[in-house]
Structure formats: C-alpha cells, structure tokens
Amino acid sequence: MLVSSLTGAVSVLADSTAEAAAYEGPEYSLQLGHIGAEGSIEDTVANRFTELVSEKSGGKIDVTIYGNSQMGGLNDLVDALRYNTLDMAIFAMGNAESYFPKSTVIALPYLFSGYDHVEAFYESDAYAALRDELAETTNLRELGAFHVGFRVILGNKKIEKAEDLKGITMRVPEAPAFVTTFGALGCNTIALPASEVYQALQTGLIEATEAAPTYMLSMNYQEVSKYCSVTNHIYTGNGLYISQSKLDSLDPAAAEVVKEAAEQASKEAWAIVADETDAAMKAFEDSGVEVIDVDLESFTSVMTDVWTALKVDDIEGGRELLETIQGMKP
Image (cartoon, rainbow, N blue to C red):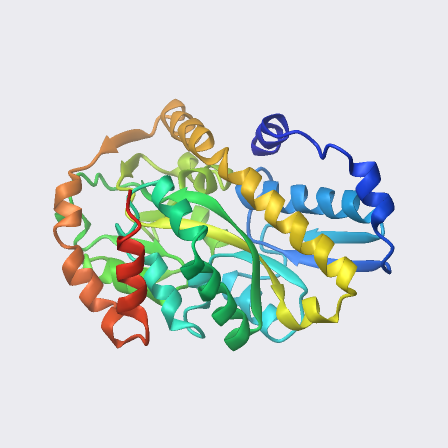
C-alpha cells in the first residue's frame, strides 16, 4: 500500500554501491520505535530509512524497527529518547510539549492553510532554530520531518458543524493541546492510546476519534465507524527522532549516514501524502462510511477562543513563532 507507493514514487539511490564503499566507520545496531501499524506512513518511513541506512553504510549499520506501539505509546517514545532507553523513534514535535511548550504552537487548529504552507515553514531558518532548541533542552533531535496529513473526525455521530461536537465523547491523543482544543469545542475528551481506539469505538466507550485519514485507515477504524467529517482541523507532521546523546556518541561518518538517510526518507514521504489521503477517503466510502463536507466557517470562527484556551501568549516565544508561521502563508 503506502510502501509500494513510496517505492514506485522515488528511485533507488543512483550509486548506492559507491556510497556503501565510501563508508569506513564502525558497525552499529540501532533500535527505532513507532506506533504505526503495518502499511502506515510511519511504517513506510521507518522501512525506507532502514533501507537507506543499510545502503549508505554498506550494511554496517542496521536498524531494528519496533512498530505498532511495541515500545509503548507516544509519550513512552518521547521519554525513552529523553532518557536514552531507546535510540530512535517517530512522533510529532507536539508530543514533546510537556517538556517543550513552544511545540504547542505547531499543533494549533487551522494554523496551516495547506501543504505548501507547511513545507515553507519546515524549510525555513525558523524551523531549523526550533529543532536546535528542542534538542538542546530535551535531548530530542529531529533528523527529518514528514507529512502525516490534515486531521479529520471519524466515528458514530454525524458532525456537520462545530456546534455538533458539544457533548460528544471524543478520543484525542495523549497531548495537552488536543485535550484543550476539543474541550474548548465542547467535547468530553478521553486521551486513549491509539491501540485502544478500535475497541472503544466498537463498544461505544467513545463516539468519535480524530486523526489523519491514512493513519485511521491503517488502524481499520472505518470498520467500526459510520461517519467521517472532513474538518481538516489540525495539521500533523511526524519526525524521525534520535536521542541527541546517542547521535553524539556515533562515529562522525556513521552520524552522517543516519542524518542523510533520515532526511531523504522524510522528504520522499512528502510526495505521497495527498494521493494516500485521497485513497484513504475512498476506502472509507467503500466501507460504507458517509463522508461529510462540514461547514468550515463554523469551525474557524471559534478558533480565537481555542487559541486563547491554549494560552499561546503564556509560552515564551509562542506569539513570535505563531506570527512567523502565519507570515509564511502562501
């Protein structure tokens, strides 16, 4: 699915043999954790990264992948890198907001107008400075960022406008910004691990969940849902992260291989997200889910209240970062 799309969308390294021969560093074994199921964008990027690392190092650096939450939830992955019990992981910068409050800004609803806007920010000096600040303060070094997509709502309640969210039991990720956002919209929020969402929808513990379409398809949430409301409320981008102290411990040649492979795998993933999102939405419809084009004005009109609830102005540098991102809108 995603893996085949990615493989078909990009060519293999033009001269991998030459690159492999050029690596003369020591051997390393790295561990990489993520929460994605087989076929998810996380799984795709992790496998492509592993392939590139092997090619660039002539097989002297190997990466063992622990997907599908084998290493725990997103908060567990963040802590594992912070405290050096895991080498690498895939998560969103916003998952570190408890340790790095400024990352809350990136998860603001309706902050980005589209993928061009996101990429303009990700390729900017402002984002590079943010990555450096995150590494210096939390030991989390992002080596490459990639699109997961704009998030939609999937569940068993028909949501056509923002007012329809009031009183709904909504599963949100284990991140304060999401709890605050949907709480401000009137939802009863439950922060469940991703692995528990399918059963929660099936049993009625929750009435709806939200995430990028490709991720929800990989978890088969459409099997236990009736409606998909296309809110596109928050952009989610994940990153390939490594413990900064682990990176510093690597031989310089090995560190360069890891950084190059992460950047290439992440950039390649940018090219497939739109097509894969369309494919996921079609799969929802084919499974009997009713796809709803919501009244976006009803959502965007209440964002001032949501942004206030998230206390952007209380975050050191938060307002400046917000205005920088807004200024990059195409």
